[in-house]
Image (tube, rainbow, N blue to C red; front, top):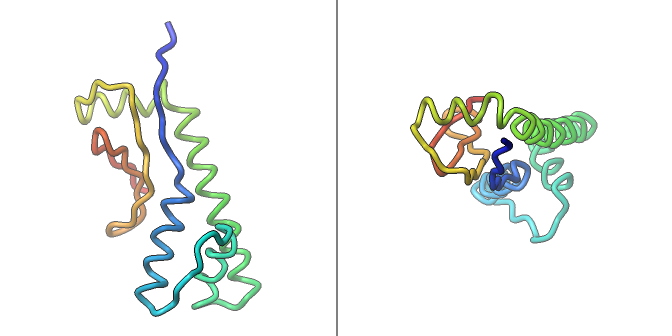
Length: 117
């Protein structure tokens, strides 16, 4: 029997939202609707040369998409069993979100399950 899960996840959007908050706090306003790659490059250009900023922006966005794939690929075998064991959450609705709190984490909001990155 295959269990169907309702999964909400956009780690890139979560990361970009945080980056925009950091930039706004540093006095840089980003216009709405900019592509994620452009926001990421601007963020990394604050402390790195252009070529390294572009490289790191691309690498970061790729890594976030890869993490989404890993979570989806391992929902049945690893993620859900671990959530059930650690948090006792029994629902089938999952909302994964990227957060920065003393390091990078992915948090499943319904169970408060935390995956350190």
